[in-house]
Amino acid sequence: MNSSNLPTVSVVVIAYNDAGLVGEAVSSALAQGPVVTEVIAVNDASSDGTARVLDELAAVHPRLKVVHRTENSGGCGTPRNDGIAAASGRYVLFLDSDDILPPGAADALVRTAEEHRAPVTVGAAVRRELPLHHDVPWMPGLHTPGEVIERPVDRPELVRDTLCVNKLYARAFLQEHGLRFPDGRFIYEDFVFTARVLAAAPRIAVTGDLVYVWHVRRSAAQVSISLDRKDVGNWRSRIEAHRTAARILAEASPVLGSACRVKFLEYDLRMYLRELGRDPEYQAAWWTLTREYVDTFPEADIEAAAAHARWIVSLLRATVTPPADVERLTRLAAEPPRLLPPYATGPTGAPVWSEELPVELVELVGLTGLPVGELPVTVDAEPAGRAAVRIRVHDLYGRLAEAGPVTAQLSFVPRAGGAPVLAQPVELHPDSGGGWGAVLPFRLADLAVTGRRQGLRRMQAWNVGVGVRCADGSSVFTSLRPQGRLLRRRALPSSRYGVLLAQPYRTGAGALALRLAPGAEGALYLVRNRLDRARAARGAD
Image (cartoon, rainbow, N blue to C red):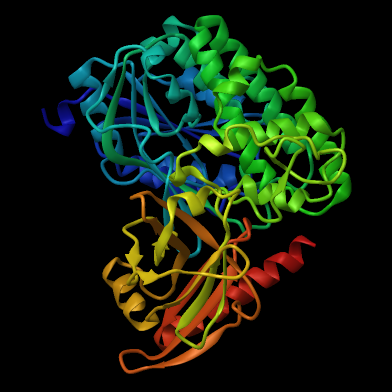
């Protein structure tokens, strides 16, 4: 079956004050070919040139239909609902005005839907960090290409994929079950719509093709809703959307409802916690909101969550205000999680969070039974010359000592996704503080060459981690905590590139990362990018 014979798709594009970007989004939908019978662009009463851009495009492209709302809805749900109402294709696909559909996305989704007679079909999506064009896969490993899920209850972890834009929906399925988005100013409307879809128990087919590119513009004057976390209102909206979604799912299946609440503890809670910041007023309001919501969770759902999430819940319950070492808590919420020293014990010798009141008796239940690979180990790193770092691996209540650390190996993981670059393993030696140390060399020029081969051109961004292998055959991987003068930028001579600019930096989660700019062009690009971020930050202030 060629593309011209495939059932048709209506692509619904929603736009509000996005005149500079909506044209690219619409063009990416029109470029899908004959499988897309129509692109329905819903202008949510924009006050800029969005309406003009859409009307000019519609004058040239007969497949583009424009719906102009006379009153702004305040959210994304109402314009999407308008698009569904106007759609005539057999299938519906959603697209935001600042994102794009990659070539062949609609074709791949429809072929998979038809092959498996699936009312819902899901494909791969990436978050593309702009302007660097770093692609970060969305929910990697959750979906298996070629898989067909007969009922969502068979795969309760599907509740973790809350996006509506990486999926194709049979319009008849949406109509039969009355599936619509929340109207009006409802943030995180995808949560509720996705819950309603899963509650309707559709067969779901999976294609391995990339079907959606989600553009992330962190330096934009107006960031997207998911990135706009400057006040606690965003978190309040997310909690309310999650509360609604969990209720919908629980009414359809207790299994899905429970999975939704566990997902909140393991994903949403940790994501916002690691970005809690240092504003005491924000921290206090966030803490109160979170405690009140988590208190509504059944105990069985809390017990079903990962150990690190359970410890966070225990801390929330233990104190009505954030603990003094709240920054330490944000590191535990990072990925991978790290529990920073000091390590305290309670009266019975059990691991506890801290010796400080009121959290001295918050026991880290389950830590002693965790596999070595899941231990929230902390590894410090400081400079050791121009081409090496000195690391210190902290023991964790004797758990690492039991396993017997033997070697440490640096790992450079592309932030855009891809295969890591591994340095040679180095033998670890016990130190006087009860931990282990080593000096780990690396070759930035070789790393830059590998980055070029992986398609990283002017600037490369790497997460720097370390793997610790133990005598008992176990191993643990974690990020590095930069110490001392490790974050100094360096311009290094290079026989291959002339100059290699290296800029170590600390991520929002407090971990070591590295930007590499090979050659004069790359170095200039890195400097300009840093200046652009600084200007954007000043503008935001």
